[in-house]
Image (tube, rainbow, N blue to C red; front, side, top):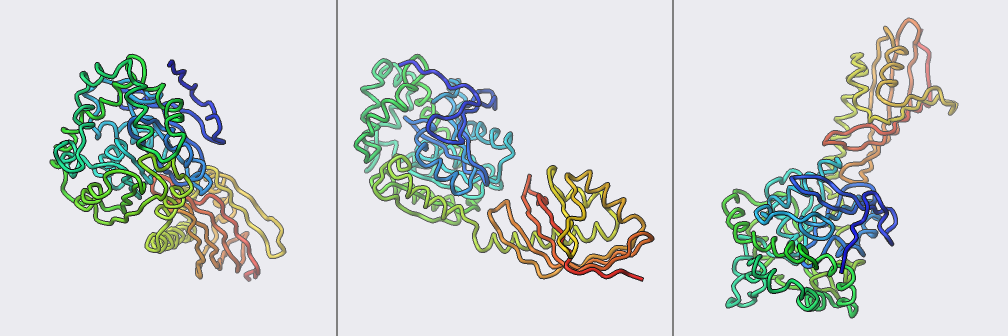
Length: 437
């Protein structure tokens, strides 16, 4: 079953606004699918799946206002094969992290299932400030529960981990027999009647051929060392909220929850009904709804953002009053638009971009003494990285060519870029003006 890798930039068939891309990162070439706009949700698959295990839920998350990114793990799907000594979960996580940084995303909402859950734990535990929310689903944490389940003699334990971890032997025994070996997995990991058929067409072709199934086993080959590394580097619990999620017909729920309680401070747990291991495939509507609730802005985050906007605009007034127009201009996004209206509703001026804003304000204010009062903020938080405000304002400008006292409002739209708020759209409407003597 030959696989034709999609061309970079091509649209994903059947998924509007989603595209195939590739990234040269961390010594390998990773394929990923991306679409939507807004705060980032990164979805990480397991074995024997590809990015497409998330296919049904991705457009639902995009419709909620998220940028959705789903990579193929190294060695699987349309990503390149790699050497076995590069499959430590910390290294696999770095593949994804470099993609996230290259796209300017973050902090991210990070989701992993199966092997992908082990990868996202490595990501979040080593870089906690870069992960806003973490979903551990249908997985086990190396060093905190996985090791016990690798022992078939333990209740709930399975041979699968040990067998798959013997990369060369497992590859030798299954190569050429991938259909016989993997097809039962698709039946056992889904409640859908068409699971085997979908698995055979969607995932199986990627696990045939010289490097196919080996790429999946390589992730298992690193798990013992992953556990040792996780335990050795564990110093404090994960600070971000963590959702432990399973299908109601899924696997390892109690073991995952026990492990998560060892490593995470703030835990929620839930079940996706009418779903098994591949829960997002089985019940995408319930999955998207649960993710949406978990990713939503909390009351505490909302209060913090409202205060950040107040502080940000205090800086705006300070720079304006002290004629630090270069610093004032830096508060605006590269494509920001600043529009001014008079009391009659007529547009007086429109500026685009920080340079024009700086030049126009410098020229118009000139030698004038300027005083800005901002009060009665009404701020609406749209996401962790976007907000809008209506701000009552009074300004007093007394110069040789401009003498005016104005009363009105600012309407601002704000976006957080690289951890800093910026103005994307700014409208000043004076409802009344008085000419100074």
